[in-house]
Each structure stands twice: as structure tokens, then as C-alpha cells.
Amino acid sequence: MPTSTYSVRGMTCQNCVRRVTESLESVAGVTDARVSLKDRTATVETKGDPDFEAMRNAVQERGGYTLANEGDAEPAPEQQAEQSGESLYPLLLIVGYILGTTVLIALATDNWSLMTMMRHFMAGFFIVFSFFKLLDLPGFVNAYFSYDLVARAMPRWGWVYPFVELALGVLYLLNAVPIATNVITLALMLIGSVGVLKALMEKRKIQCACLGTALNLPMTKVTLVEDLTMAAMAAGMLVMYATG
Image 1 (spheres, helix red, strand yellow):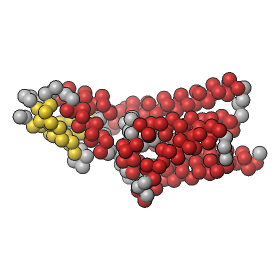
Image 2 (cartoon, rainbow, N blue to C red; image 1 turned 120 degrees about the vertical axis):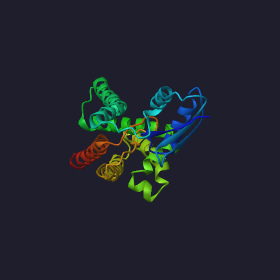
Image 3 (cartoon, rainbow, N blue to C red; image 1 turned 180 degrees about the vertical axis):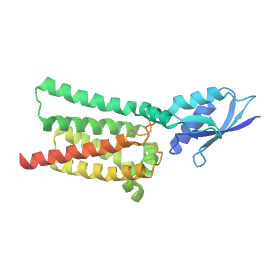
Image 4 (spheres, rainbow, N blue to C red; image 1 turned 90 degrees about the horizontal axis):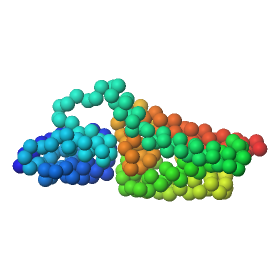
């Protein structure tokens, strides 16, 4: 049987390997696919000539990965920027929905207090983001471990973190123990931003785990802004409590 080897771009963890493997094996004519995260390659056995276009489309549709012939040039910088913008669209859309819901709640209750609106936004943020992480907890743990400093020092932290986010979301929604809730949020977001900043400075092309692995989001400056914005909101609420 013919055997072909291709390069695979966009993989960051074993969950990505599983997705790419399943995508390739779903293509008619493919009898076996062996995907390597270390080498970023896929070795495919087929009945007859391989249908490269079908395999490339299957991989792209499954998670935004890119299948290419070995030796093909990397996408030009402007193409990479365009692809990154497309990949970030789900993240921006989700944040927009949370923000829109916050405004609608303020409109329905006629309560435009900045404190209340920030609390509702943070509640929605943590609850929604924890949901996506819990869709594939093992995959999230693998992706999170690749850049988070705490998860690297304490591997079990990755398994706990989505539940901490969920708890924070509930506490913000109920307005329970607000001081402790904001202190914990401030600490988590600042520590998280250090790991993100380090990954960006090293120019590592890795998957952002903020929405788990359900969506193939690249690590960009948007992730850093997201963490720092949440930290700033928590700090602002602490100041309001202290001065109010």
C-alpha cells in the first residue's frame, strides 16, 4: 500500500494528535494514519493514490490544523495573521455575548452600577469558560500544562482549575464573599498572565487553553489582554469595596 508523509501544523498536545489521526482515518481510502507530535508529521497508508485534498480538508474541518507536503514553505506572515484572526473569532464572539448579556441584565433591572455590571460580566466569563474547559478536561490539562507556571510546578492544578473558575463564577453571580472572590481572581489572573507573557516572549506557537480544546485557539496577545483585563476588574472592585 502507498505510504505518504505530510507535515501537520497547529498541533499542541496529544488531544490534537488524536483529532488529526481520527480525521485522516475518516477519509475514504486511508487504511492507517500515524501522527507524531514531536515531529509534527502524519504518515498515511492508503489504498491507491492518496487523496491529499480530502485529507487536508478533513484535518482543517476537525480543528483548524493544516496538512502540507513535507518541505512546503510556512505561510507568509500576512497569511498567518489572517489565520490567527479567524481562529480568534470564536473567543471574541463569546466575550461579546457575555458583555451583551451583562448590558441586557442592566437594562432589564435598570441597574447601571459599574460594580454590579463587572460582577455579572465576571460571573458569565468564568462560568462559560469553565464549561468549555470541562468539555475535554484531559485535553485542557495537556494544553494548559504547556505554558502555565503553576500547572507545571503542580500538575494536578490543571485538573482543579476549571472547577475553581466555575466556583468563582457562582460566587460572583451570588455576590458571596466578594473580597475573597476578587482577591483569588486577582491572584489567579496575574499568575496566569506571567505564563502567557513568557510563552509569547519565547515566540512559542502553542494552543491557548482558555476555551479548552473544543476550539483551536492560538496563543496571542489577546490571551494576555484577557487575563490582565480580568485582573484589573478584580482590583477595581477591591478598591471600590475599600473606599465605598
